[in-house]
Length: 379
Length: 198
Image 1 (cartoon, each protein chain N blue to C red):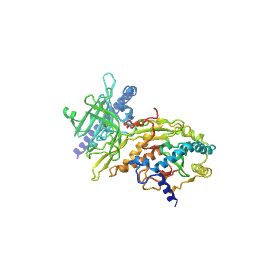
Image 2 (cartoon, helix red, strand yellow):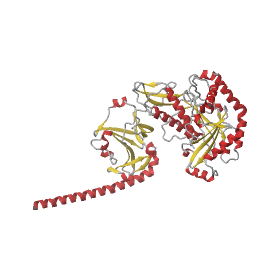
Image 3 (cartoon, chains in turn cyan, purple):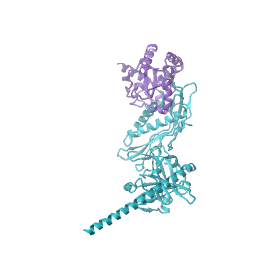
Image 4 (tube, rainbow over the protein chains, first blue to last red):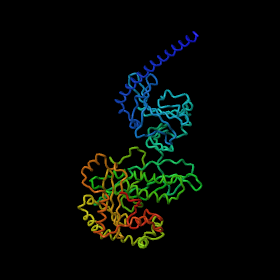
């Protein structure tokens, strides 16, 4: 009996000691973290304008209160992105991205800033939770981690499979694409990623990375491609496609655009997927008033902005209605015409659209854009 | 009965069983198209400017309708005169359009809400506009007045709503392909209207 009570007393003592030391360690850690965070925060506020990395323009909120110290002179701070943007690669296969600003203090009490992105493979997404730090990735982590040095903007990436660092051999790397980029964009409900703007690219060699290689036309409204092609989301219309010119002596302005085009995934008679290009090589006229009764001028930039929105909406209408169905060119063509005539009139006060324009005004070439803030109003 | 009359009139002005898109050279050589074109050109060169002045003068004392602007697009092949005025009511922007056919003495008034007033005005600007606004009538009242004037002074009839969407099966013109060309397209313009919204 006595032995048991003694045992209990010992155990209790041990437990108390353990709790006490743990508490104090945590306390010390918290204080140290808070101190490091406020030091880094001060330095960041004073120096962030000296960096030109794209990511810095898209930071909504730096969560200093959730900072982690991962070793003596390394502080990792999570941050959120503006506009509810997500980050992935061009094909949208990178998921669950965590964003971290990583501050490394040097001997002169200055900081180096890095941008770390941690992507966990879906199957193992719980190997990484919101509070994980780069230096604390679990042993079974599978995914990819990108590190960007914000001074040089250089990026390196490392793949992990079950905690093991996979370094592809030089030859296999060169056989793959010459660049490995991540993009700001949006995930649809079905998991489809639309890239909008490049965050950075990791390059091998001196090639300048381009996004998607541009949109190609099929010949005159037809042109399907083989069923093995992955359908690529089109970039949306750029307002710079539209050059509105006021007509003399009339409260009216017009822009003519040729080669408006978009792609849609259709199904062949046998059910195979085909990518169909809908294109309008003939100029389409967009017309709108210049000034309204409240004395508001509809500038050429505003008219262009609204035209781009209406064109975008109309393309979406067609894809939403006929995507992955079996329809003829004619049906797609008619529906797009109806929707564009309706949408431009719906968005723009007094807006009108005419296909196969007979106007003698020179037509501009249709352009698309990946820029998040493509804007013509301030032009 | 009236729809038969109108249908027959359509066949005088638009060729049957010719696709505007794929058989365009035949289409524009047809006697129907030449006839339609002649009517529009004649109106544009001889009647349009007096007509337009008369319409605008009729409303020069109306707080809202005096701001009507002539946005007729005969060079786009429209079959009607178009007068537009914007109006903001309860924080929403509307376009009131008066369309007067040049082929038959019929008119249509469309009032469409714009998708997003914030594309044009900030909250602050809207507040300023509301403050300066002296229009006390609702849009429906304004439209009623508009219609009465067009009918009494210009002797135009309102085109029956029900018939606007009547499709003429074997005719096409501009954006309205075969099976999509209706009486509204025949006598007014190429906009496909869904519903009048007020």
